Image 1 (cartoon, rainbow, N blue to C red):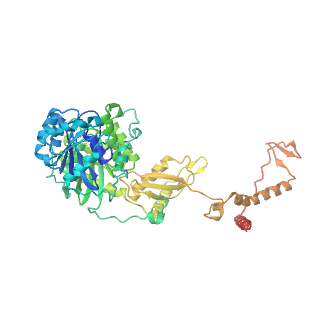
Image 2: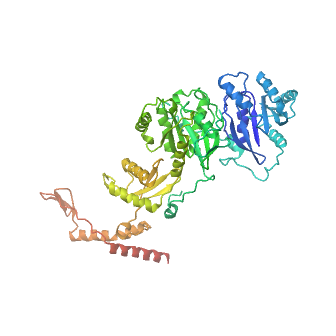
Image 3: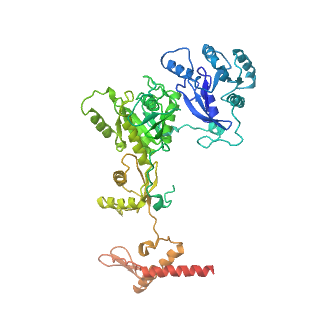
Length: 594
């Protein structure tokens, strides 16, 4: 079941859309014409799953982007099972009158919703809208939630749905109920990105890779030996699903690529930078693998973001990094890399996501020999943070190298899900240590004892060391490089965590794993040392060494005329004596309990 919301600009369509699905999915702003692309989300209506679509405002002016937005919105009635025609109770404009006539042939599936009935004093205004001849008219307030129940009951009757809400209370994808999710703040924190001073249908496309367009719309120690075993590779099948997000600066061809992959005109394509505002979702299939693709708004520097609309667009674009498995970082091959691309790359790496650098618009290159090799070398030089990321040259407009790009996405995704057996990791760690030992610190050599892989997606390893303070970063980077080179993670970011290995008093001599149970045992173990010290003092007549060049006898200092005598080292306790001390401690403890 598909339900669409249609109306002129600034009647509250996106606010109603967010209210119904229970979260802030579409951008809302008092500025007219904020929504441009179609935004579709699943909606639970009385326990029934339907799809709700928010559309851009229809205008009489048919020029530029406004023409594209209006055409896309007016194409919806033919595909919809129900239409929510949204009007403003305070005024009727020429755009409203045009839509009244346009939707007349679809009157059997039109619900006229009169919005902005924010208080009881405006309820009488609803009667004025019955004159337009539509059978179903409901007064609502999308921002305050008034009349939403009446709207839903009317839709249930129109679609002939059974009320299943009593059987199951649905939750949204974040586990929140509709009202709770709508009231919660789902925006990305300002610190996530703004922290620097700068801040047509292609159904006939053939990628020679069995491509088919689809409808667009640890615990670190959990059994280290078993949990660390490499999982069997699953055969490629339709059960495997990869979610990719397309990010980059404005006007790099992101929407063109998404439309090409899905085989539909999901996103409006325009030479005007910043055309896309909302996150547009689509899906397709390639080599029997299902893909979900997210088209995002172009991300500009903070200093150039002046409107609230673009601010929210950028925040939603950044949020897709957490939602996706693999990120396609789109770069204009002609313009080359920019500082903004580096900042976006930093966000991706910090989140441990797979990333593919996609250099688009190769059809505009000059065609000089080795031109692409020179561009790739420059990217590697200016982009050290992504020295592991694959680079792919494509032309979304000319449909070049799309199959190679998707093959690389599959490769990156498989590495993100790979798990290394703990034994194999530590065997490799031994070899790495022989090739390059950890450097020496101020108090001795650093040591890496063993490690284990603690997570996939993101791929993270934990290594146990003797001393964490001042552990050299260069050796951590060495471990990362070795992991990528030898363990099959050459195309993805790898994170390494360090932890000091805890040691007990008895470990050093006896090799026991148990920690010292209490201070009493430590006192018991040190008893031999205290006795040896007392015996030494008795033997020397109670003398104690003083400062350099003198000794103290009977409390009076006496010059020796030379170097001070070395302080006698206390007698060390042997392993046998230590074992006896531990046994005495256990016997005393049992005696106290009895």
